Every structure is written in C-alpha cells, then in structure tokens.
Length: 296
Image (cartoon, rainbow, N blue to C red; front, side, top):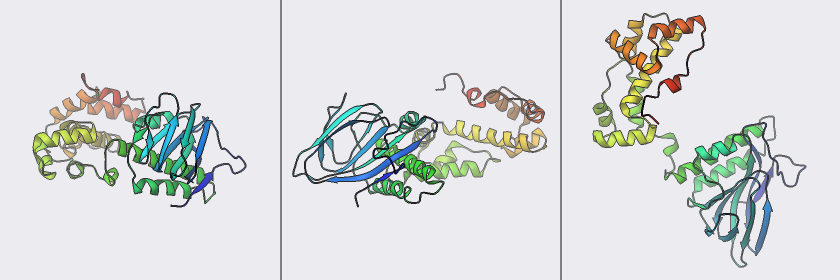
C-alpha cells in the first residue's frame, strides 16, 4: 500500500475544479500517510472523499461531531469548510479522491452516501483495490483516461454504497435470488409459479417473497408479469407475428387474458401498441403507466 497522488491536470497543484458540463469528473486522488502531527484546513469547490484506513483523526466541520476513526468514510460537499487534526505519535493513512460533475450529488444519493457525515463502513481490502484501480487510471493518459477515471470512481462509490447497505463483497454480481431470476428469464413462454421460484432458491414462499422484493423492488408476480410483457413488446416491435402467437411466446395461452394484462399495464392493446410503433408515433411513458394505484 504505497502513498501517492494523481492529478487530472498536471499543471495545477490543487485540481480544485467545479465541473458542471459533464456528469462526473475525477479531479485527483491518492493515498496519504502521516506519521507525525498533522493540522489541515481548507474549502474545496468539488466533492472530497476521505476513507480512513489507519489512525484516529479529529474533524471540525459543520454538523460533524462524531470521531473519525479507522474504517470510517466521509464525503465533504463543495464549499464546506473543514479542519482535521491528527496528534503526534499516531500513524494516519487515508485514501482520498476529489470529484465533481452535474450528476455528482444525484449519484451519491443513489448510492446512499450522505455528505458531511462520518459513516462507519469498516476496513475492506476490496475498497483498497477500487482505489488502486482509480490510481492506475491516471497512468495511461490517452484519450480515454478521464472516462476510465469516471468508471473507476462510479465502481468505488457503488462499493461504498454496498458497504453502507451491509452487503458483503461479492454480492454486487450475485443477487440473493439469482437462480429465480435466471429461471424467470429462461422460461418466459411457460407458466411460472412463485412456489417454483421459491423452490429454486430453497426458501419458503413467504421468505422468498420478502427476499425477492428487497432485491428487486418488486413482488415476484409483478416481476414475472413485467418481464413477460417487456418480451411481448419486443416481439410486437420487431416481428410481424400474430398477436396470439406473441402472447403464446410470452407465456399467455389465452389471447383475451393476454390483451387484458397488456392493456392494464400499458393502457394500450397489443395491436394498438404495434400500430403506433409501425406508424412511428410517440408512445406514452411506459414507466409511469406501469405504476398501479398504491405503487411507490
């Protein structure tokens, strides 16, 4: 774990830029180590991420009263004044990154990362690996290095979010209901029961429903219905197959029932949907139409 600092603009000593013409931009990043007394203060125009790997630090900033200890994360929002102090005879090692962009605040919110708050997430080697990949993105300064930096930053922030949510390493690529999801997508033309899906995951039906909703934000039946209807929409758009055949391929053997389910979700019959697509007409916002009364 070597210390170092990496800057997007090599001719600027601070890289303290507020960027608003792109969604995200990494200004600089690094790993710092201070074996002696440290007293630092400042105000940044960008977001400032500190992930403390070793030591205890006193931080003075608006609305921050908690101690800052190893395994803690903090993200200072732009224009936030901060002071931090490390007493002598105590090692301090921390990862840091400064970033900005028009989507920065929204991305942090989506990851569940509160700004100007000490967030205990623990020491995790995979977060060190995330930072190291971010550092490496600065080494090859080709036409894509800024985009590579953004890719590494988004991965890092998402992993912070997973730590905050209590997920363990490895869950990013494996849903707790992954077998059930694979079963749904592999059997769209067949009837699919929640009982069968629960069996795929070796869970009781009630427990499976709860785990599935937490993982996807939908009930199992709503997920099945939406996935089948999305497939039907694709067939209606891209083929000239009869509506009855499309319904069969999406697992609806009763054409009338298929039309009712389709209309209840999209406020259009399958035939009307196809005609509008063929005519190049603008369709309603399907996302809003799929929300039923009482949905959130």
